[in-house]
Length: 283
Image 1 (cartoon, rainbow, N blue to C red):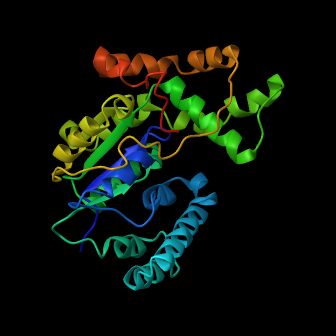
Image 2: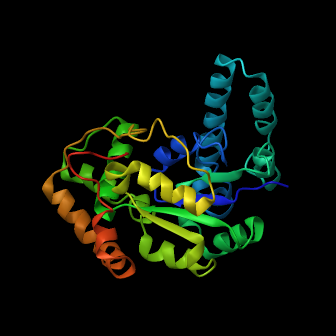
């Protein structure tokens, strides 16, 4: 039975789509036909079940459309197999990774996994084994939250104007949870040893994308590869000017996260969690 050797567990809005798309170019890596399988968070985070099924069905639909355009009959047959309900079960997760050769590194990048409760992290260890490796991209907490807010604005096709409209976004529970390094990192490290984790600063994607990917290769045991999309912005949220008082509110809200990063990582690492202003970011 082949299951993933590596999980990309976070953070949301920290370049995980960029990582997924680039690793597809590495001949030693095997990734599912769409990003974010949501197997573990669907099982352990009840609130996610409102949308995880829809996400997986949408990913399967797009993958089938792409395979049909490419006239890839083998891929279409495989996608038909993993489209059969029930989805998001343990059997389904095994079926997703069934085509992965034992000689390649199976990788599941789903940033929502970082939010798993303690029993969920223990279940990950029980299913995938104690030697599992985790990649965790750390983005400056305020920058990450702003990017997430812009993503929600894009989905709702609405830019806040009145203070109460901004409050709706600031009060969204995911705004804190998806970047809650203070809780998530110790929770995962209580189950897996520190050497099982590769923490990388988000800003390195802009300043040294190939160096970033070389570190991933070394950590995962992948061969050196060419990455034609390494300098491409895979996803970028809508451009929305955020008032300074909203930024200040976020800075106050997330001060404990910033303080934690400063105690957990080096000053150089923390500095690199922000993308240079002139380069922009992934999402």
